[in-house]
Image (cartoon, rainbow over all chains, first blue to last red):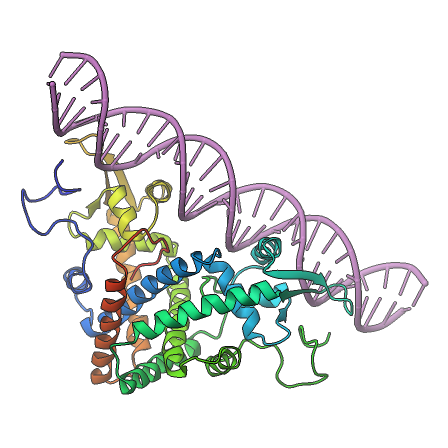
Length: 191
Length: 191
DNA sequence: CCCGAAGACTTCAACACTAAAGTTAGAACC
DNA sequence: GGTTCTAACTTTAGTGTTGAAGTCTTCGGG
């Protein structure tokens, strides 16, 4: 059964493999004349790196029986600090999803015992989502796995390199935040 | 109507705002003793940066009347090179989604005239998805917007900095790829 | 007081994606 | 040259998300 999907050459060693980063940039340059390879290299590497990292995180937390999406909620609640409470609206805003999606996500997580959902007694319009002890434990386990992974990931960089990498990324972040006052961008994934 | 969701202090200026990157790292350190702030800074900045960038891309291509998902398909076909053809299975693999999802995505895009879908006459099990002229034009327009944006994003970095940033990212990429032989990680988003 | 308006969710309908089962065309074997 | 295997898609059922409409509480006048 032939190779995979090659309509071209008979035995070309350059099959329709997924291109490496360098191949990809070369291909873009062929198709799009005024492309700065250095810029493209940074941007493409950023994108790929993030994608692989998210896959890795997903697998790790799956081992704990939670989804990446649930982990995001746990992180957000922990970041809010004791007593680990936030309303659905605020959670939705921070996670970058709609209130409707948040409602369902909280349903699930409450069913699994990771959070509780109660009406605010002082203002019965509001709802309070609070992390349970079980939820906090899950967060801790996931956090341990994540930091181990991250430490390993940066292993090849010297402390100086880590510093300058972080500094440059923050500069880019500032730039993109400045260019984007905010607006309703949906796209999941937190850090 | 009060602030937003503050059960704590009466007028604390530190409301439940979305934390800045530094606040976030400080919060994690409070909750998780053995956290390396430098590592966390890199990882968190990476995550945030990518999220904002994806939102930005999404808005730009939306102005052209296509979704981020559709743009990924266009990019993948262009990367395949002339005659801009790939099978649904190969597309699915490169985009990180299931063949089933690919089927529907191609349906839509064929309906919009961005691609054509035909059976391979030499092997009628296979299907060939090919970019139309309109699809290629859309890609070009999107590419122009994307590169303008990327160029602007990196504006504050010197050529040397761009080079070392790219080099470090690629080192990280290699490490994460090495640690992840591949496996079936789903998570969309391409570069 | 009672009424209208605003705020904070929740519900509903439509859509996109995944996992698993189904379909159909070539390949391999005897 | 028919049976079985495999590959490449498509279909189906179930989950998660969005956008819009609906519900319920609280606030602000008249």
